[in-house]
Amino acid sequence: MRARINRWTSARRNLIFSNKIRASLIQPHFLVAGENIDQPIAGMPGINRQSVDILEKTIDSDMKIGLSSHMLFLVMDEANKDSTASYASNPSSPLHKAVRSLKDKYGDEITIMTDLCLCTGTDHGHCGIVKGNRIDNDETVHELVKIGISHAKAGADYISASDMMDGRVEQLRKELEKEKHHSTGIMSYSVKYASSFYGPFREAAESSPKFGDRRSHQMDVRSGYSEAIMEAQTDESEGADIIMVKPGLPYLDVLREVADAVVRPVAVYNVSGEYSMVMASNPTVDQRRAMVCEILYAFKRAGADIIVTYHAREAITENWV
Ligand code: PBG
Figure 1 (cartoon, rainbow, N blue to C red):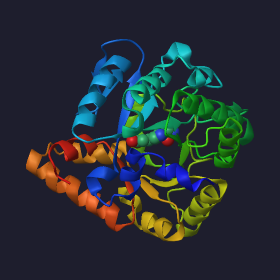
Figure 2 (figure 1 turned 45 degrees about the vertical axis):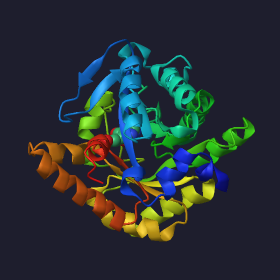
Figure 3 (figure 1 turned 90 degrees about the horizontal axis):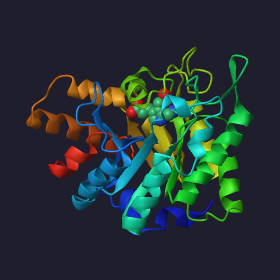
């Protein structure tokens, strides 16, 4: 555990400690290979899949309005996928390029979190190395650590482990220490349910499993507070710098229990299906403001320090929060 990680830059301090809702928002982005690509995503109006050049322009304008925390997901070409997601640690991937160029340009003014999971890079769409019809935990952790270190080398502020394998925070922290990445944080998706609210994301990231589902590693949606607290405290003791609960709205009660049970900052992920539910009613700007503010206040009330949400850009642009 390194307590200084969350204090390392002004951007990190603002994100985690400011107490202002607008500072605590993280905007997710979907990165694709190529140039000049800016593709809308079905069910997620306003959120596009972008190539590095377009993403840089998007983030330039985000930075101007004070939106300085960004979560990057790599959407891989089918040709780059294999059984171990080997391309995910390739330093010339669009994600690594984007992290390097954004950190070069903005340095300590920007906070970049990179998603860490195998699902966008495996040809079968599973979050891990498949042996028979099961995901092998420890071999998956081995691959995850390689990818995480490659993100750290590119300059990511936080590695955002969304895979739900056992022991990955500990192994990643050990390797970060070994490689002397003493200021790289781990934001762990500690309490992540096998939810049906990830649908639009999986379309966008082309990461749906080709067979089976994610219930052997993501949490059972019927599970109660004790398992959530156990997962959160385990990740905290393994060295996670930020603990996440995901999805958000169906689990506000879990968020409150977890926030009370850990000492590290807590993030909540207002996921793609939650965003789609709001946008599907074709709300006017005023209706959107009312709904989004109500949702953000609920997350804060339930104990979130940090909120990952596809509404971040509009909420900040329009000064809703
Ligand atoms: C990768 C990952 C997922 C999400 C974030 N990271 C999808 C999944 O677990 O299938 C979902 C985010 C969203 O729905 O907005 N494992």
